[in-house]
Amino acid sequence: MTVVGPFGLSVRDQAVEADVLAGLAAVEEGLIEATKSDVPFITEAAQHLVRAGGKRFRPLLVMLGAQFGDPHAPGVVPAAVVVELTHLATLYHDDVMDEADVRRGVPSANANWDNSVAVLTGDFLFSRASHILADLGPEAVRIQAQAFERLVTGQILETAGPADGHDAIDHYLEVIAGKTGSLIAVAGRFGAMMSGADERTVSVLTQYGERIGVAFQLADDVLDIASDEHESGKTPGTDLREGIATLPVLYLRARAASPEGTREDRELCALLEGDLGDDGRLDEALAALRVHPALEQARRATVRYADEAREMLAPLPDNPAKTALAGLCTAVVDRAG
Image (cartoon, rainbow, N blue to C red; front, side, top):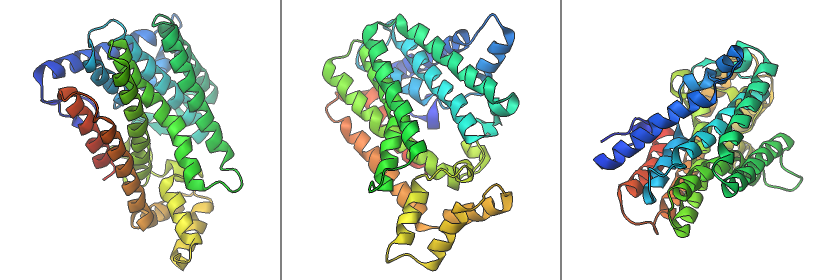
């Protein structure tokens, strides 16, 4: 049995597969409904990325987490919609900050319209997520607010850079735990919580979500360098061009500054620190990084976090949902090559 979701995840149970597929279909309907406005232009802009598709990784995690309680509980689908709307809203804002031209294989909102429209559309999606969240109760509102604070803090820390004396790699891992891990942790938590699962299960799936969220982002870091546009849905080297030092770059810099660093390492660092607005220079940087040991080092870090996520599942009862969650760990690693 195969769920139509991220990475073709396999769910070896017909009933669970049916539940997850039905839940994801309901989430799609909920996303379309939540992005409608009386103003046609707002609807068009708000549905731009919804209709472009996406992996729906966070809703899938909600649905699998709900399998440890009542997967048909009324709060499960709305919670998944909230998490995905929040994620989509951050993409609109990210594309403005990154000046990205492509998102999910289509022109980004800021490229299609302008930065103001992209920012305001992201705000619109946040407001719609909050409206749905209010019906899920004060505890859900508090959880989402805390996660959103961590998400924004992570973005600010990324913009500010590491403080003096703070290891750049540790700082980066802290950033992505906030930017990415926090919301994916909420997906696991909401799935268990809304289904009425016990507190231990809620805690386990929250911690699992945090770790697989970091692994998911590290896989994205690798893909930004190693993949072509068809695979990643965005222009390769986007982070490099914007001067964002992802984990492979940080490993390269650490190596170049060490006694083992070579002249080639230092030359590649200099290339990355220069103007990569030129396509030729960007292609040169990508080609060099694709064969550099730093990229494999980043892949190993992805494996480490995915393994930690899998280990977190140990206290849960053995069932098809647990097997699928473990399979997600493998799929995230496979995604990074």
